[in-house]
Amino acid sequence: MGYKIVVVGATGNVGREMLNVLVEREFPYDEIAAVASSRSQGNEIEIGDTGKMLKVRNIENFDFAGWDMALFAAGSSATKEYAPKAAAAGCVVIDNSSLYRMDPDVPLIVPEVNPEAISGYTKRNIIANPNCSTAQMVVALKPLHDAATIKRVVVSTYQSVSGAGKGGMDELFEQSRAIFVGDPKENQVFTKQIAFNVIPHIDVFLDDGSTKEEWKMVVETKKILDSKIKVTATCVRVPVFVGHSESINIEFEKELSASDAQKILRDAPGIMLVDKREDEGYVTPVECVGDGATFISRVREDPTVENGLNIWCVSDNLRKGAALNAVQIAELLGRKHLKKG
Image (cartoon, rainbow, N blue to C red; front, top):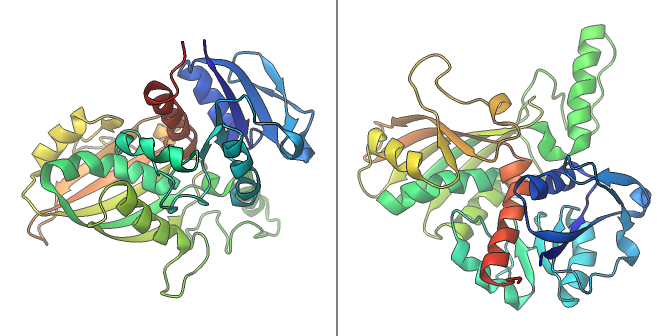
């Protein structure tokens, strides 16, 4: 006996990836509903690469009663309206938007990091998926924190345009084409030209000069991993289609050598260590696409602080940063709380 699963926002980048991951990981479902806005109603979408097609249903009149879990990839406004309805109908919501992440009654889960926190879902019948850049970072930090206790993290991100949705990917493609053929370049999704450029601005600016994306990395890391860790972030959009990269500087309470850190990371769940001090001995975002791992390279000691390390962290943001993490949460929820059969 399997689960009845709803994917809300099924026609978007993350929603489609959720369908792919459900199939790839052989998630035990009996039925899947693909749900989206009225604009997509009646369209057909494939479940992974199974050849089976689903007709997209309209979120405005979808009845969540009788469904076990709903994976939301629809953005904050749609989530605000429909997630409480799903939760009230007895369908557990796993939400990919930022809406509920800092709600004290909603657990914010990365299964490799804080699986025990999922029990708190019963307060609102909602579980939050973290920001894509936070998810991969805490997977990398968790085993190191357990070994030597992290005091402070300084992270600079190199985030792909897919983090801004299909429109962001289209804009990078169109601007690149325009530059080559001499056509005028237009900015619609991003504040400045993204093709052959980098933009130190993701989400809105806050009063202290940071952006909301940077704020998310700070507060979400504290909620997921440890409230005592100090975090500062600079988030940058780069002309890469898929795959977020991060340069992470970590200061520990205890001594941790680079070689010991490599051993720890090599054995940690969800991590693939690729760290050879030679040409091609590291992972770039192009190589991580389609993979669920968080890749770690360039592990080295920072001599400017007493107990410091630098690491390079790369992951497919549509997977571990969104769809895969949501499905892993669903798997954890099924194993621990919604057992079937």
